[in-house]
Amino acid sequence: MPFRLICLLNWVFFCFVTTTVVAQKKMTSEDYIIRYKDVALKKMQEHRIPASITLAQGMLESGNGNSILAREANNHFGIKCHKEWTGKTFFMDDDEKNECFRAYRHPEESFEDHSFFLTSRNRYSSLFDLEIMDYKAWADGLKKAGYATNPRYPELLTGIVERFRLFHYDSLAMGLIGETPEGKTVVIHANPMITISDMKVVKQWKSGRLIHQNNHKKLIIIAQGDEITALAKELGMFTWQLRKYNELNKGDTLLPGSPLYVEKKARKSYEFAEHFIEKGETLKELSQRYGIRLSQLLKMNGLAEGAKPPVGTRLRLR
Image (tube, rainbow, N blue to C red; front, side, top):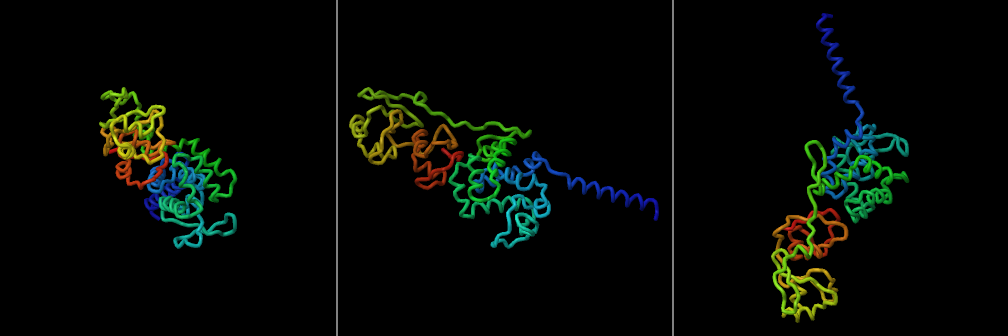
């Protein structure tokens, strides 16, 4: 065999071996996060499953993408075939001998199926009543719903989330923080704090009560002992007007310190573009805070009457 041909064959063999070694190099936790964080962010936005939980489950179930199931079948979440599965399969020993697992063309397909698995099964429906930013509640909920038999499953998931600060990706998906080119997270949002002192006093009523202005609309601040019929008489208005302008039902209690508009609220905010819902906030309260009609707030955000968006939801204000 010619010497040049021998050298060429040796070089080809060396390249093959080198490529194989590189391909088989184990992924670290950091490698896994960098590789799949964008997929997890997308699934959170599409299906409202915390990105932190998706990443933590993928890391735990697939051994950071290094398990046989992940390498041979692109299955990162240990999802078994079940009777409805019609796709490719992969068999391996697990709880029982030669069990059937789902196989995918690529890992991203596994992430999509994981989202579908949780959103389409009744036993996981209670998860979607949880606050989307509460990864601890989601970890507990997955165990209670029967996703895993390991009694330490919630502890293992939350440990991964906190060790690698995966909760940052929940905030990133919800638009609460941004990410620099170097991968560092930065706060890009802080909800405006509108207080009484921020509201301009535009006049003093003959009764001595101050008329404030918020979002170009006039209002008063409810005082202790105020009652809607007496207020309407004091302001020279009808009680139905005050109720209509403030979306009040008969029997609703007036809370001291709260705004009460004396004219129709605006259709949008002239000062603020958005608000991210925080714990305890309601759409009705935010409608009063920003001086926007509740019906318009619902319409702008594609929400139905009575909607209760979860914590972290981005609300358009104009």
